[in-house]
Amino acid sequence: MLSLCQKIVERYSKGSEANPVFVQKFEKSQSAWISYRDAHLDAIFPYTTPNEYGSAQPMCAATIKTELTRSRITQLRQWLEGIEEGDVCLGSRLIRK
Image (cartoon, rainbow, N blue to C red; front, side, top):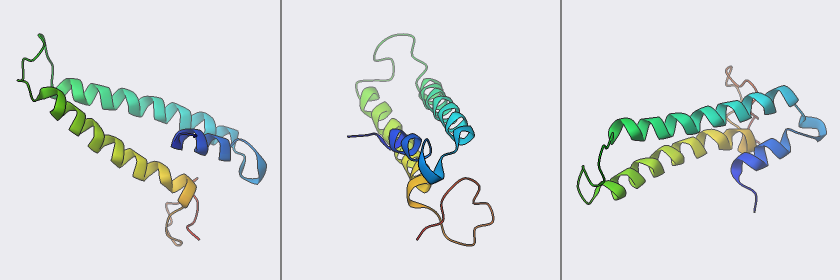
């Protein structure tokens, strides 16, 4: 099964929707988002020793990471599912059919 990012890259790598500039910038943005996600978690839990924030810390970190990831998935789906027609800020995203 392809990941959401792989599906986006595949879709915009060939055929009528091919856009190599988009693919390059998309991959760069996804790499930057992963760095942001990890740095954000490090800022919330800047541990110096294991369990410094208590035994619930791993669960809390996982919950925050999940929330960030779900938000990113919503953003990424716009390149596959589209957004409302008439959005003047459409850019490279599809128009929802």
